[in-house]
Image 1 (spheres, one colour):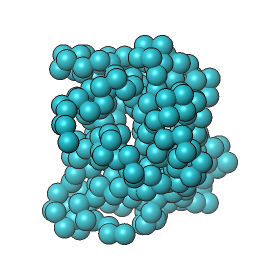
Image 2 (image 1 turned 90 degrees about the vertical axis):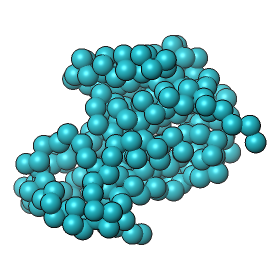
Image 3 (image 1 turned 120 degrees about the horizontal axis):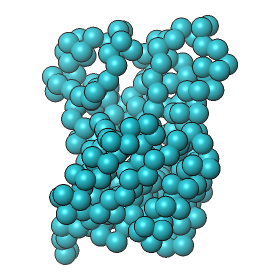
Amino acid sequence: MTQTSSPLAGRCAIVTGSGRNIGRAIARALAAAGAGVVVNGHRDREAVDAVVQEIRDAGGRALGVMADVSRHAEVAALVQAAAAEFGSVDIAVSNVGLRRMQPFLEISPADWDAVLATNLTPAFYLARNAIPHMQKRKWGRIILISGFDGFWGQVAQRAHNITCKAGLHGLAKALAREFGADGITANTVAPGAIDTLRDWSQYKHQPREQLEKEIPLGRFGHVNEVAAACSFLAGDGGGFTSGQVIHVNGGHYMY
């Protein structure tokens, strides 16, 4: 088998929420594999531009597009910008999330709607707009970044977030079933405890030191380890993997 250092050459990847943390690592990894990458953010243009520059400095191709992915019209424009720049949309990675810690009976209808609009609906919008481009080439990869709480439900006072994380995998399975004949795979990547910049006030129930003790590998994961799972799914090696979830959690939870 011929090996290539650019297995995704000629492909275009959109990675939402890729201005920092896991999204940034995924964007960089896909670009390193040869894909033209659309880096997306909502508020921090400087962060998006910095990731674009990092990719270009490393010899890759990248375009920064600001879009609020909770709005369908903006996602549609994001996908169109990607297709116009790179000629297609082949890989769509939905990586956005809002984690709120709220007792269930204190979650207002507005709170519920806001979390679903940020954590679940953008994946629908992205797939809805990207899949027609994938159908034209009879090749596509949908990758939804979920989380281990959507599979174990271990975190109290996060009903809206857990619902979204579980829903993302349900969506991936539905897409895998419906669009497999078009050469499109759809999968979920569920990170566990990953070392990222975060608001630790929303993790009072999970002290870092306690989490590290619970993980068999004795450490938090690295964003590049999540990106590696996405690179596998995006490439030819992941072509027969669909409707599945890859848990990247150091053995913290075993399914």
